[in-house]
Image (tube, rainbow, N blue to C red):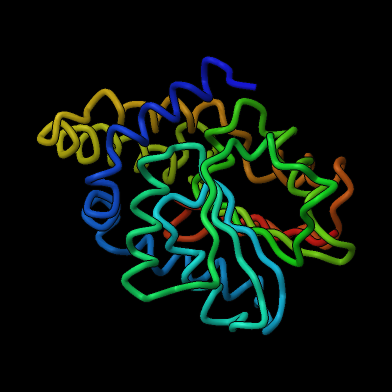
Length: 233
């Protein structure tokens, strides 16, 4: 079911889709690729497993997982923004990739009875959901027994801490001015707003525990700017 936030997020990503990869590389100095690789490394996808990349964007993580699971495994990339999914499909076609499936869908609409996965990744997607608790619970229900999941996103650090101050300066003095050049300042201002309402690392770990996850680990990377939550069912 579409909500005001779901529609806002979908509209944002459809609008910026044609510059999405370019701006990700520019604004993170290319480091987002390393952070996503670290997430995949921590989850250790294995040959023959079934995986999902939720809120997949243009498919960076799906492509990394594909290299590990091989042709006997399966992976599906799901995102609610159709224009973003179209770019992922185009990138996939360049590799003549027949293993990765792509689907335009709100992840909350995925049927938990018909689809189960050994592993699930979500990078910069959990923060954009209408309800973080429900999003983590959805991932839990989509996993097979003993499955694992990983979430990569901005770290909502303690107010006025050094990471928090750096983050605010970076977003206001770097991200928004650069995005303004491409007429996306309104869209990228959304990032700071979404981080403020996002649970802290400790809160995310608590939610995961309440949902039923085990072996919960949250770690910060890039001087506390980003966080990775790893959980097992």
